[in-house]
Length: 279
Image (cartoon, rainbow, N blue to C red; front, side, top):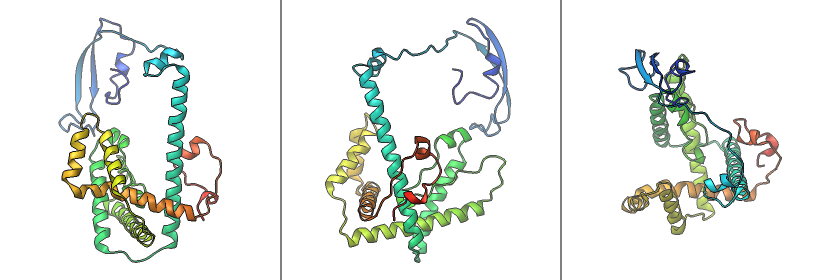
């Protein structure tokens, strides 16, 4: 199908104007970074038989559109979209608030952290980096590495693009800085939680397991059994819950400024302005 992400460069251009029933011979060159090493950089000829040609037609914005997605009518579809957008905006707003708060904590608290913990966190970051670097660019961009927990809210820089000169040593230096910050913030949040008796109850863990199970339709039972049979893995669910509760506790004590922003500003890469940070 034309227009797909995996379409080879030059393939579509040679098929423009083709009609149903037509046969065309197409020559393309596989990208040098193609996922299949044996094909990378090589020329290939394709015999293409055009079965049919379709074009997109404008979608009618009416009740039938709402019914097509399982809702009663167009009004219900509009309401569902509004609610979904609001949830997305709320989540983005909270993420920016948490990152701003963590930046403030990182600025105000600087203390030595156990080198062994930094090494473990760095190794985790570096494995993610190596995995991403080995992916084809299109896949790497679509599957950018997430920050590992909000205490590690520093974004992991993407692998250098082809042609960019960035030594592994320079990248390692930046990632070690991020690893140290993550460990320091994690220890700081853990101490705040300990001093204020913040804990994660069994019900909260069970709810997290249920949410994780719902992310894998058709395999819910296997997910639940996995966590029950491997108690150590539950920490991966408990840790972000604990972190969120500590963040909420700190936010309740802080003076939070508010300002109106556009959706582009809210979802953009730029950092919040100083007057939006907790004091």
